[in-house]
Length: 271
Image 1: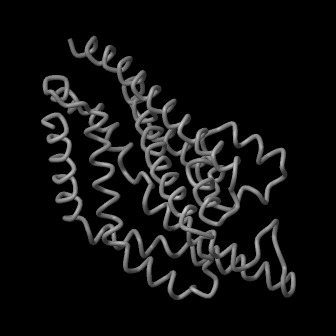
Image 2: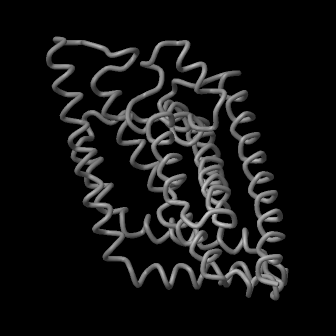
């Protein structure tokens, strides 16, 4: 299809451009192991203080370490690295003008670049992440069955889309404000805590955990990890996937709305 060919070309160009920075990707991966290692040592110390067969919430030590390893994998597939900064810079520097004159949709253009960056990062990070998992294989918990893997893969895809659309929507603020860094950092701070990146959400009080499910944050990380570990099953799994897909659609619509409102302001300011 001619309409899809141009976006496939964007994806290929994005991979080629990203590969020129493969050393940066590798360095980012290796340095990313530092907070992960610190977190694993912290939890090992906590469990050792509780004695043999201890649990925190519903997690044994092996399950807790598995949780953080799966978080690392999901993060590698879905994290938005610099896409929001680049989109904001395109708006601020006027580079989006070319997309108003060409038959290419800026949102899909950026989505292709996002996926190309993720593919490149995965290619570079595959070896060190695999070595880490092999080193901790005695703690690593495998998914219960193949169906769980399939649902996990679907949820990871939805997570990637949700991450991107939320970041894209946040970058649209560049149409109205000169500096979006504060807003991006605030969103990142909420995501880091409320998505389950720092700790599993189900160790929180039930009221707090339940309140978080009225936000998109648990579906950005905690939910797919919960599927992998077999903690989200049955109707809870189906309902969660529907909710996650709903947040993706809502984030997409809001991103589109912000773009159209921003373009009107951009055109008026630029004449």
